[in-house]
Image 1 (cartoon, rainbow, N blue to C red):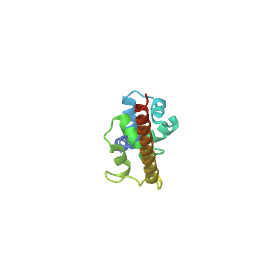
Image 2 (image 1 turned 90 degrees about the horizontal axis):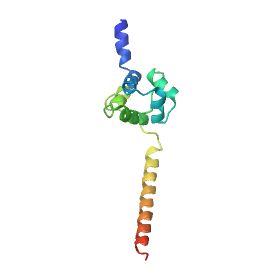
Image 3 (image 1 turned 60 degrees about the horizontal axis):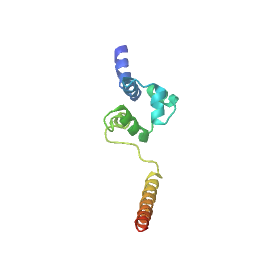
Length: 117
């Protein structure tokens, strides 16, 4: 029974994160710095005390070189991801509109500069 428990424990999200992180010879502190979180947060994830947020999982997958969605599937199943926060879509649309406006202003400035002697 002890071997089965160890095998199950090796398949937890925390164990997978730890295995990939140590394979890259990154300390928890280094990995935390790359993610912009505390070392304590990484430690908690690796010990399955807490779980990273869904949006953080994508960054973790990139850094660790896992398949896209693989870590999320461990938490939420292969096709279900948690719903976005209520304001996320509106904030994204606002940011896109702001960027489009900035691009128009830049183009206008470039045109004016081209017309200068």
